[in-house]
Every structure is written in structure tokens, then in C-alpha cells.
Length: 389
Image (cartoon, rainbow, N blue to C red):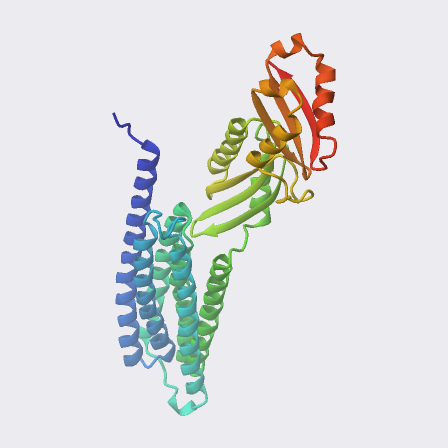
């Protein structure tokens, strides 16, 4: 009889909801970008506003970024598979880098065109009243789209949507500059329209560079901010059974964060208890640290930053054969029920489990000394201890 898996169903539902809202907000923005872009260019040509034409091109460039966002959102929501065991979250990151690059390219084009007009004063024309009206409409509508998109971006911690939101705000900011430039030109300072276009280009370039730079840092696995790393550290140390931690590494994967950590536990714990502690650490981080999606916990019985692993020590099968040879003259060795090995500080500590009936014929202290004497020449053996059941 199969049982439902509500955890995975909830994750799937959340992913679908994230995708639907991403598509909705992006499509709304696309329609507005199309209408504004066409209106700005047409009115800019009719009203002789170089800044408004440049702003129209900027608005139309938003359409391209909207399509990038839709493509990335569709593929980023896919679950992990054999070829992408960590999921497809990096598609968002790559898309964000692309958005930043497009912003920079658009900025260069706008600034270049405006400078060319300033260098040719006879090409400067006086903008008309409708250029002012369209610029004002653009400011209001693009700021509204920015606010709406940022709400969704923060809700789902989507850097890609945040990048697209800033693309919308850059259009709103550029429209403000255009508004001022047009008003100045109409007041008699004809060059202000072109200067406004250059200002628009500089602002867009700065936003594009920041978005691309931060996303590129994610692509090269830059760790989380120190404040978040410290929160992760304190959460791990609060788990019962964790003595200390080291080699704490973090990285981002789209909206999620991945954590790798080595935790030190009591070296004499059972494997199952150590595993329970590691799972407790993993689940606690996912529950308490909002952006953490997965945690890889490595269990250490000692601080392996100070004690290096010795691959030259014998394995269990090799050592058991060697011990049998060393203890061949000890009759009690034939009654050993189990051997526990502790690989610590570059040596091996041995625990032998023997039945209580052995004590009928042997003194426990003398018996332990007998076993230890047989191993006295072994430099790789740290100690031996007998237990009885």
C-alpha cells in the first residue's frame, strides 16, 4: 500500500504557484512595455524629442528581457534530474546576468546617440507638448510595474524578477530625466533633451552593471553574506550532540542557498546516532534559515583540520587478519564476539566484546594486558579495551 508524500506535493505546488505569478507579472509588464515603447517613439519623432525616442527604445528593450524572464522561469521551475542533480535554479542567475548585460548595451546606445546630437547642435530640435505628456505617463506606469514586480520577487526570493523589476524602474527613472530634459528644452535650453538622454544612459548602465556583477558572483559560488553565515553557524551549534563545526561553506542557487558543513560529534557514538544528529542539523537549517534549500552534513569524530587522514592505516578486513595472527596464542581470542575500531588521531583504538564466561578462567586486568602485549610492537594501534556481555 502506497502512502502520500505531502512534503513533495507542497514543494510542487509552491513551484507551480511561483511560476504562474512570475508569468503573470512579466506578461503585464510586457504589454505595458510594448504600448509605452511604441508611443514614446512615435510621439518622440512627431514632437522632435531625442530623449523620448531613446526612452522608447529602452522600453522596447524591456520586451526582450521579459521574454528572457519567461524562458528562464519556465526552465528554472523544473525539478532536479540526473543531469542537474541540484535543480535548474542557476538558469535564473544566468538570465539575470543577461538582463544586466542588455541594460548596459541599451545604455551605451542611448548615450552614444545623444552625444552625437550634442556634437551636431544643428540637429537639436525643440520638443513638443505631447512629448512631455507621454514622459509623465511613462513615469507613473513604469513605477507601478516596478512596485508590483518587486512584491512578487520578494515573495519568492527571485533575483531574476528583482532584476526585471529594476529594469522597469530604470525606465521610470529615465522617464523622469526625460521629463526634465523636455521641459528644459521647451523653456529654451534645447541641449537639455540630449543631456537628459545621456543621463538616462548612465543610470541604466549602473543598474545593469550591479545586476550582472552580483549574479556573476553567484555563478562562481560566492558565499552568502557574513550575517547569514553566522546565523547558520549558530543554528548548527544549537543542535544537541554537535560539539563544534568547521569547513562551513555556502553558495547560492537562484533563490535558494546550499550549505556544506563538517560537524564534530562524540567519537564513540554509534553510526545511527551520528546520522540522527546530522539529519537534525539538516532539517533545522532548512526550517530556520529561510533561503536554505539543502544541506550536506559531514560527520567528524575529531577535528580533521588538525589531524590529517592517514590512508596508510589498515582497513577492517586487513586488520582483523593481522589481529588473528597476533592473538593466535591467546585462547580467549577465539571467543571474541565483536571488534569495534576507532580511527582517531592517526591511530586505531580497539574495543573487544567478549562473553562474561571468559572471566571464569581469566582475570580481566591480566587478560587485557595479554591482548595489549601481543600488539605492543604495532605503532598504528593506540590502545585496546575489553568489554564483556
